[in-house]
Length: 394
Image (cartoon, rainbow, N blue to C red; front, side, top):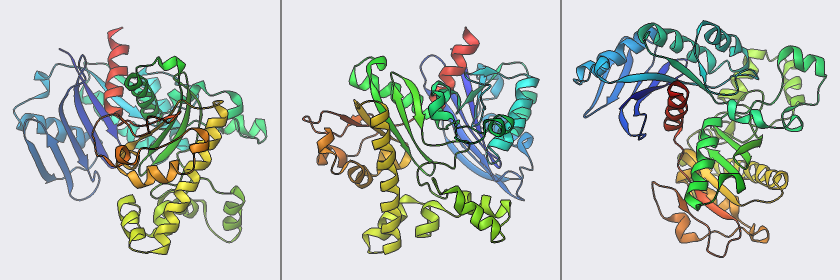
């Protein structure tokens, strides 16, 4: 049995999972974090779990720490039958529309695309450099979050600005969370026992980062995130949709581009309104009577419903509304608020099904509901492993 090591690297972290290519079984997982800080940390889950602090000055040291952790657990990497490494990459621009073997050219293009994903691609690039040096004898594959959305029509991905300016600077809607939307829409079809090609789905990926996607027959036809992961729904620390004129107003008032970046990406969303970015804390505060927390939830719900309605129109109706990711999978109250009053459209929740906890795909709509409402756990790592293996085994 061949295995795929899936890598999801950020600017100061490396998440990894070892996945059996044939079955999707997880054999090990871990996290190297606080890379670049005086003291880093690694958590490794193999047969047993371990956690320790150590110096991790850069991503090269992070991968070395990961390899050493496998060794400490009695499973050195050369004994793990690693056939390929699959790297999650957030921004692939319009160039990379499918899983792609990493060579020097592709690696450098990922670095160049950092200007479109400054919070993500630099970390991906550093990790890819380190991983290719350490695992030099196996193929490396980049799986792009943007690839799934390349099926959007021009009317959905084009911004109505001067076309020459847009072309020069690569300004268009790219969309993100593509790996999640792809695997969740496919698993929803499997759960329903219906061909994916026959289904019109709105997938709501609701976590600290959040996006909606209109999926028609397994193809993305519209999505809420845009040039960057900032556009669209209200998120933990990101604003989502905002009038561009507000940004011009703040620039004229003396804000720098860097200050605007920090405001919109790190001090907005739930944090900006409710002073916490954890939806569980926001919900608890709202239930305790905090008006700011209640407002934050109301804004988030309003924005989700806004996109839900738009995408049901785009799709010409809907066969399924699918909730996924941390908040979407675990917050029954939010799901009820999103679906409230949609009986006219054929959406009817079953309160008991909605409240019942479960770790697997499940139906939360009533038997009489014309539109299926599902909760389907996302599994981006398994999807990255699947796409990586399909490419290298072809």
